[in-house]
Image 1 (cartoon, helix red, strand yellow):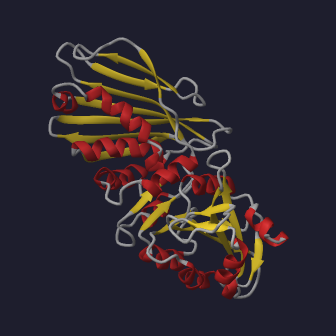
Image 2 (tube, helix red, strand yellow):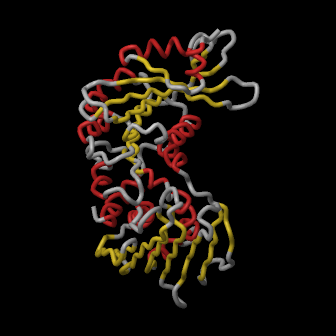
Image 3 (tube, one colour):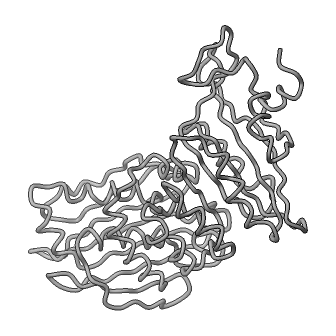
Length: 380
């Protein structure tokens, strides 16, 4: 029978442990009632322990609430050994550790599915010790994914050390308040060629909706005639250019081989730019709406215009209610069905974006082609 400490561990409560005893303490806390997927089967398992990856999470200052809900959701969808790095205000060069289980019930009358969270805390004087503490904790023969959530330049030596060793890097900076230079540094392919920005996954639904406009028999003809793209985004706080909107422009530009010409921030939260294609110049506008209650920056409208044989063709997507999953589609074109309609396309929340980053392919040519355009649009 599990003791009280093991019960607290399985309920998600952090159990303090010496850094050199983490593995042995985890073995004791899991106890004989834990079945490791792919391992020997105990007679009466109470939980099934599943580990698909090593997820090292840089969580910024020592804030118990930071990332907890998102991490729990990600671990439920993609069970992993989560190693959370937290910077504290404690003096000295030392590391404090605690361990906890992350469990959920996949179906009634089935054992809980659990993974584990290891939290390593250190003050700024000892933060550089963390990479050495992380390495012995990595499960062998599993991917090592680094999830970084604050300006990587703040602890650049630790970031570079871990980024170069990881099999995948997820850069999860606030949008739109992150410094564009921090984005450039964090996504530098020379540090990790498989780095991804979570804002990239924030345009997944919009990429699908935009692409469906050009599913006709000869889409390249219409695409070659694009003359303007306008994005409207909602942002928390004061108006700034959000990466999620810039990413959608960058994706289109990268896919169609556009070349950047000129950019200017005409007003706070409004970007005007132009690209050149083989057939002419494309005007770009990104405008923002401020909403203090918005959790993350998100697109609420996309309008494309193309030069048509009988006047301009327009393709318009709007999410009238940012909290709704519904998107209104309006087309004015002689070559496409012009009946307005509503489609269901839910916005991806922070946990959706991180999970998508974990489960996507390591090679992503559209991301690679769009990245230089993103940095240019952001002025990085």
